[in-house]
Amino acid sequence: MLLPGVLDGIKIVEFSQNAAIPHCARLLAGLGADVVKVEPPAGDAMRYLAPIGGEGRAFLTTNPGKRAIALDLASPEAPSVVDRLFAWADVALVAMKPTDLERYGLDWDHAQTVNPQLIHLTHTALGPEGPAAHHGGYDVLVQGRSGIGWTMNRTREGTPQSTRPAVNDYGTGMVSAFAVMAGLRHRDQTGEGQRIDTSLLGTAMSLSTPTVAWFEHDAEGYEKLQEEIDVLRLGGLSFEEQRAHYERRVEAAGGAFRLYFRHYRTADGLVSVAGLSKHLYVKLHEATGIAAPPRMTIDDAFLTVVDEMETFFAARTSGELLELLESHGYPCGPYNMPHEAVFDEQVRANDFVVELEHPRIGRYATSGMPLRMEKSRAEVRGPSPRLGEHTREVMAELGLDDSTINALHAAGVVTSLDD
Image (cartoon, one colour):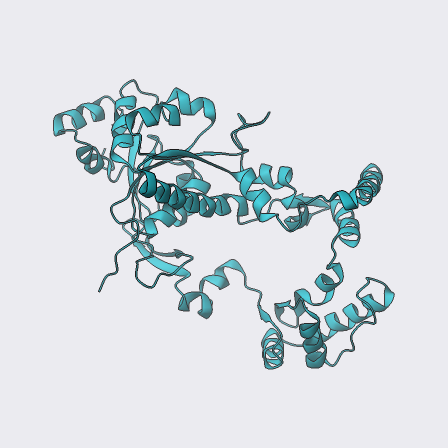
C-alpha cells in the first residue's frame, strides 16, 4: 500500500538555479509536493556542469521528482504567467538578487497582492539586511566570510581550498525546507501567507554554532590570539601554519582531536575514530595496548602517544582495525571516497542513496531522502526533469488554452521539450 505524502496536494513553484533552493524543493517534492521548476530558456546553469548525455550531473542529482517549464522572465508577456503561477501555488521559492526580484515581479510585495495565502521564501546569499545584502554570492564566498572555511577547508600549497560538497548550499536547502513547513503550519493556524527569508550566510553561521562564538570573559585572550595570528600573517606563514596555531590556542578539545577523534592512516587506506569521553578514551587504549598520555595537554609526552597510535594504525589493515575497535566498543567506521559511499551497505540499507532511470542517460544513483516517516511517504519520486519537459502540461493547468500556449511558444516566452 502506497503511503500518502504529508505534502500531497501542496503546489510549489521554484524560481531558482544552482543548488540551495533546488535542494529545498527536492526535499519537499519527496514529501509529496507538486514542484514546478521554472527555468530560463537556456536552462538552469547546473544543466551544463559536468554534462553526461546532454544533462549535467549536478542537475540530475539535485532536481529529481520535479516538473520543469522554461520561461523567459524578461519577455513582456512573462509577468502574466508569473502571476498565474503565484495564484496556482501554495509556496513560491525564489532565489535571486533583490533587484531582479522586483524587476521580474517575483518579490513578496507583489506576490501577496496576487495570492495573500502564498508562502513566499526569499533566498539570498548574505541575508536581506546589511551593507552587502544586494550582493550575489556562492557557497565558496560564504565559507570565507562565515569563518566555517577556517576550520573545514582543505589546503593546497598552503592556501585553503573550498570545501566540497557545498555544505552551505545543501544545508540551506534543508533549512529552507524546514522554514517552508513552518510557514505552512502557520497558514494552517491563521489562513495567512507570509514572506520567509533564508540565506547561505545564515546557514553557515548556524552550522558553525560550536566554533563561531565570543565571550566577554575571554575577550583579552581573543585580542592576544588576533595579535599572534597577525604576526604569523605578516611573517608569510602558510594558512596551515596559522590554523595549527589557532587550534593549539583555541580548541578546548584539541588534544582529543589529535588522538581520539580523528581519521587514521592504515596499511590499506583510512579509518575514522570518534570518542569524546573519558570512558571511551579507555577503550581505545585497551584495544591498542598503548598507554594513555599523562595529560590532555599537547606536549611532548602527549605527542609521543599520538606517534605510537599512528604507527599502530599504519601497520594494520582497515578491516582488522574496524573489527578490533568494534569488539572493544570504540566508535569507528570506514573512510569512504564519495563513489565508495554510494555502495556502502549501511547507506543502501536505509535508502540514503537511491537509483533512478532517466530517459536520456539511463540509470543513475543519487542521494535519497534524509528522513523516514512511519505513516507518510518520504521518497525521491522520479528523475530530474528535462528542460521544458512539462511546459505545456503546466500552462494548461494554469488555465491557458491551446491557442494561448501556442502564441506564447511562438513569441519565445515559453519553450517546451519538443521545441
